[in-house]
Structures are given as structure tokens and as C-alpha cells.
Image (cartoon, rainbow, N blue to C red):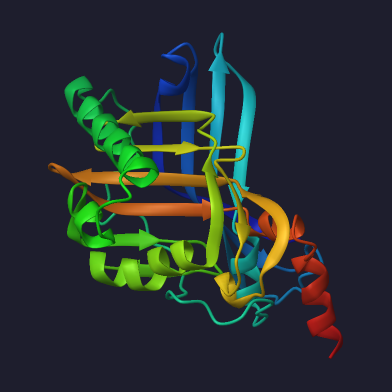
Length: 268
């Protein structure tokens, strides 16, 4: 479907998996696949123009070879790029997601172990706050681990947001208010290298929709979220966060096939 493809990588990092006490080694690549969208893909009509497929992949390495891969890509973003919006208007901004502000995410050389530990410890604190510290207000909670001018690059359907206050308004509040019975299931892989780190789960969270998340009605069907978070630390706090959520899977468990919904839009 895509011709003249370029892999435009923004983050490349590797490390030992904290989820299994360092028994496995993983490599992560994040960025965009760019090409000419010349043939339809998953029912998304081609444009004949440039298109960017946002991706992140985690590869587990053993004996110098890849033995396991987890790949996430933002399919909804490709729909938006050809003018299709199968979901209601998102709360955050929509654009081609940039890489790190510092342009230092491609780590092909060995990084300082102490810096990697600082990043890992900060991400661990963030996870603890998100899963246990319910007594604090969102702003108080975020101030412990995030810079005030944080940038959160969310997936298409949610969008990106800038500053702690706007992140709370445009993502965290809708998430907390419109999803219920949330259970944290843990991660498959979590590691840091230098000032960067991240994790993915399969699935990270289980929940139900109480209505109006992504602008959609409530559902009694249990669902789950497969999520990737990639972070950049600046000093003693986090500065940037790139987030991938398998929204198609999340909605399919509630009986909504977003690819089919897109086809219905095309027929109108």
C-alpha cells in the first residue's frame, strides 16, 4: 500500500527488562514510517500523497537475535490524514508527532548507567502515583514527576496536549471521569537508557466505559487497553511522553469495529 518507504526513527534505546529483574534484554525503536500512500490499506482509501504511520516496536533479544516483537502503530492517524474521522472530535491536538525536543533520542552508544537509573526510578515513581496515590489532586500528583511545561503526545482519537494543567483538562480528567472499574495488570517490558525509558503491556489495564470517553456511549462490556509509554527525562522530572494505545482493540471488545465504521462513512 505504501511505496518509497522511509523509517524516520526518533528514539532508539535498549536495556534490561525491569519486569523480570533484568533476565531479558529489549531494544525499542519509535518514530514514523513515511511513504507514498498509493494503494488502499485496511480499507483506508489511498491518497497518492505522503503519509506518516506512527509506530513503536519492542524487540526481545537472545543470543544476538530477535526472538519476540511487540509492534504498535497508529492506524487512526492514517485515517485522519486522508480526511476520515471515525471518532468524534478529539480533546487534544492532531498533527504529525515530533521526536524529542532535544533531538538526542537515537542512542547508538553506551549511556551513563547512573542516568539510566535516574530515569527508571522516576518512571517507577510515576507508575506508583498513578496506581496508588488517589488522595492527591491530579495537579499535585503530576507535580511530583512532571515538569510544568510537559508535553504529552497521545494517539489519534485523543490527541496531544501541552503543560500539566492542559494535560489534566484534555486527557486525565476525561479518562478518570468516563472510565470505571480500572484494574492495573502490569507490564510485559519496562526499561530505561540514559534520559529515555518506557514500557508496554498486553494488556496494561482492564476497565469498563461509563460513557463519553472518546465521545462514545457507555458499555457494559469489559474491555482492556494495550498501552505503550515512552518518556524523556530532563533533570529530576519528566518532560515528554509519547503514548500509543490500541484503540481499535479497546473498542472491538465493546462491539465497535472502527475499520467497519470507517467503511460505513465512505459509503455515505
